[in-house]
Image (cartoon, rainbow, N blue to C red):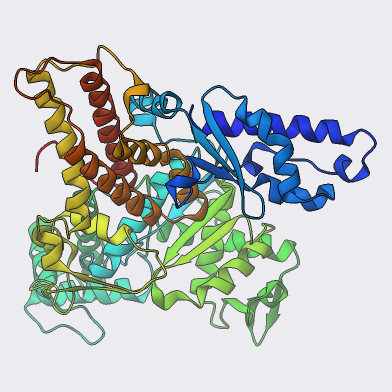
Length: 559
């Protein structure tokens, strides 16, 4: 019996009980529930059973009764379910359920039948999400800060997809504005062999970009200054953007869309208006735009912002907020139910203005937009980039620590927690290194399967009632949890829950491996217990593999 089967059966029992009470009872007539209300949790103390539910406590007050009394009403019906061994009422009204060994063990068959899809669920079916993250300026290499947002953003997108949401991952390219002109001037100065101009970008990588631009345009230095800066800017930018994309791919982070800020400023060939112009018109039509001091403003204070925001200054120059408005409306027009922004620690001020913008655009800021602020990270022992100067480059981190260790470690903590990692520890192949601990558990399942095949142990028989050892009960209990953990991680946008869960599964597996044999000893004959334990071994490998996939981390067969 899977958790979903048990939850569904409990829903039917409680619904039938409510229907019976509705006859002549006004309190019961107003009570309605869904399957989501019948939540199952793993008891912290396994002596309290395999599953516990607080449904009686949820409904008792509405029904005008005592939680323990309502629980006692439905206990006999739960006990009558196939696969249920025992039901107890504990504390203020918790219902603790113990499954028969065979019923608990059936989860193994469920896992192996589901394969790579085990853990996927439907809690976010119908949700269309735009997930924007990283979005670093294309004026230099990705660094340590971007690394955290890349790992978190990609992991969030993965758990959302696994829970039924349609997710588009998007990188917003800040390729407009003064920083791009300063970048172009820096590349041109390097091509001329001149010092970096004031406000420009130093570093060996600028020298490398300049060499590539000169190779493409040998007469660059003969062009008029303004034209030369534009050429150096545009060609250097494309080179740097390709480097960024390569770094992300090496980090196993894939974007569906790279959205250029220039798109927002470009006039439509037919209308002559840009997306920024059109955004201002739309917000004005909704009554949120006004003029003051020769500038055009949006009255965002109507929606909780700390001050109104300028769209166009008196000199006619549009603001960053104008681009933000056009970009948000573009996402809305593309049909996304929810727009998620993962921003850096220095962007707290954006929360109020973006939520106000969503409201001004006609969206519900509590539903249609979510802004996650990530905190800073430092990696002890990381060396500053020789190419880029005073930053720690992603590419250097990948060479030093590896993509798996970086991704797992960065996704292992909530986005809003400051993070300090030990680089040398992440390189260790010991159980003190969480990613090694989990990956080693997976490789051990593969080794066991390989040795089992050599010893004549196969999966020709499966008798879950034989899985009676204490470590087997623990392991089975944890394997059942992946769909719930994945769903919870998606709903809360917190993939670190998957990482912590995998460490629990790995711990249960390592203890089981030490206590229960899959392979026969010496001339001992192969029995159904060996075969059934091979099923459990392989199901554990599948769960770990699926969980690591949600984090974008590999599951090696050998360590």
